[in-house]
Image (tube, rainbow, N blue to C red):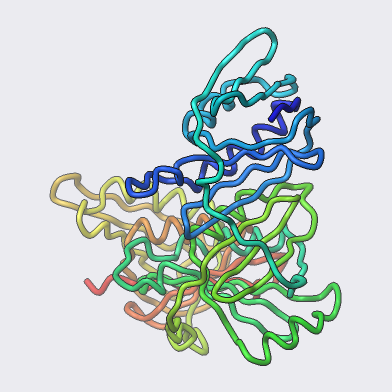
Length: 382
């Protein structure tokens, strides 16, 4: 193998692939990245057997070939080279030789034939959607996915299919987020119609969506989604992600969402976020409790926290409008901060029914509450 490429191109593939490799003591080859020079392109592949990635990069191929090289080593090396440099890569005797601006490096590799085969889609995509819309929705709901394996389905993201919209949802049973993406550009194709006639939803590992969202840039084109036998494929900007689907039944999360909220308020997101962060300094280290005190008829709400070790704090936040209702609601400060950080609007809506029921966070754009995203937090019953 012998190629010439820009470091910018080389970095894109290597650093994207490096994020999904892991230490596997039984299969050391999985800690490697596969480099293949073929048909005038450089193909960069990696897998941990749950998620796989294939990046196609522009390069001048002087000699075809392939090699598997340690992902952490080549990733650390390439990240320290400036963009817009030319880099030459050549393989000799299972060693990758890299040259740029008179500088040289060699990385010991492994035989590429030991690298596992990464599957490719066998059908046309079932959906093509705007990648930025998908990224925005995924980023908003991902913080709510569970990180422990106690209930594996909760470590994934629910993807629900309807004829005119796609739904993404995540919950760890303490909080819940749901985002909907309208399929407005064109009528879904026949493949999609046939698929949703038999399948209303799937569960995708949260790690997969995180990597897909991370790879989407401001100039990215359409995102193509393929679904195979217990697998899903995402393709954007000549990068293909392959992932297993989580087997199981996702909880009926919609039952947690109250049909209406009898009380609520509108306020500036940054003002509330700042107050919660200050209160967090004084919250108990175990319960992490901060309280939101709302009194009907008053124009200000109070954010409070106290602990034996730190003391106490109370910050007043001016409400744009208090719709109605009084309550003292206790939150885990991290859950409240995470929820507020997913909201991108200047003004937000907080809806509640009492001190102990689910609390909803929504964005306000203009004078309207956005209906395509919601974030639910369960209060602490103190």
